[in-house]
Image (tube, rainbow, N blue to C red):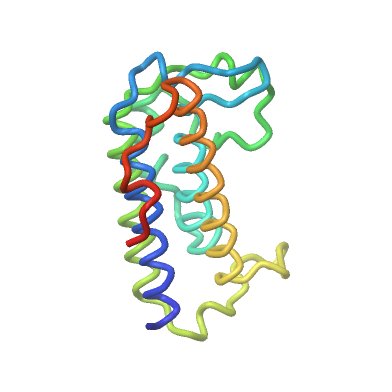
Length: 178
């Protein structure tokens, strides 16, 4: 298995678990906060997708993010350069309820772009430093950051869903390895 294959398998597994965890959420569950400083599921899902788009499209490839290029920001009525980094508790609390189906379509587009890029990488490409102002962050480093962030937020989303629905909120396949 190549490094590309390993990352693709990890990304596909993460996305399958995430989609399974959020697919049946209600609009109320997406915006629910267990406390005033806690991020709701809808915000975390949006942030997760935005971060992937930013790291892969803009940071690594130097291209416009799909969020802006394909007009996703207009569909959601949100700013072009916002991805949730640095949001205050007030900004999170006032974040709009987004349409889950549309948000997942954006996620599919982002992931397709990520996988297309990943499949074209050579072993040497993983050592490339995409931005001079971040000389300690290679393409491989970005992939590591992304995978860590994805699994972290996926766990937080599953936890919040469990808090709202109680035991058994997630299907058995969520905890079963492939």
